[in-house]
Structure formats: structure tokens, C-alpha cells
Image (cartoon, rainbow, N blue to C red):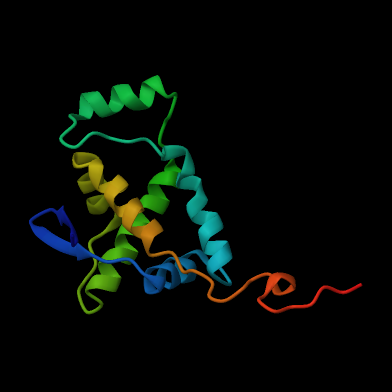
Length: 142
């Protein structure tokens, strides 16, 4: 399912893949994917399932019950993640400003979970055997 976000009067498609990681990494001054993933890990604490159609009051109660509070740094990362997804999906459009993105996210907080899920599914995977000592047919050293 293609993810979309309504920001103001515009609806933007969102796509994630290696390109989104590169966009975020460049914005954050990261040298590579590992540093980009490390910066994204600030969102790990937000791994809360928000029921579809939950009201803002229900979401606030869920966060309060879990003792979670969204920090400014987390808000910035969420915004950068959404903007990277929009830019990847539509590279030749004018991007919305951060304030408009955050307002939209707070009006529809389930978009965060959906975006994070797609981002995780798009994470680059190392190909091949990353442990050469265990590669097929390798002989053990005595």
C-alpha cells in the first residue's frame, strides 16, 4: 500500500528505500548508513502500537501510561524521516516546511507508525555471508 500524508491542502506520496536513508544521512551529516541508523534509533522508544482510528486523547493516554513524552529531537527526526520519504517519492516538488509536517503528523499520529514500518522494511540488507569464517566450504584452521 502506498503511503500518503496530507499536509495542509496537499497530499504527498511517501516512499522509503536506500535513497531515503541517503537523504536523511546527508541532512544529519552522517558518513554512512550506520550513522544514519544510529540517529534514527532515537525513535526506538516510541515503539508503541497506536490503534487505527484512535483519538488524540486515546493516544495521549497510551503515551502517558507508558511514560513516554515526545522530545524535540524525536520530533525533528520524525519530520526529517517524513520529508525524506516525500522527497524520494517526488524528487521534483517543493517540500512542505517542517512546521506543516509536524502539524500533520500530530493530527494523524498513526502515520508515524506506518512510516516507521515502511522504513524498517526498506532498510538495506547486507548481501552475502558477513562472517567469512562460516562461509560455505570454508575449512577450519587448526
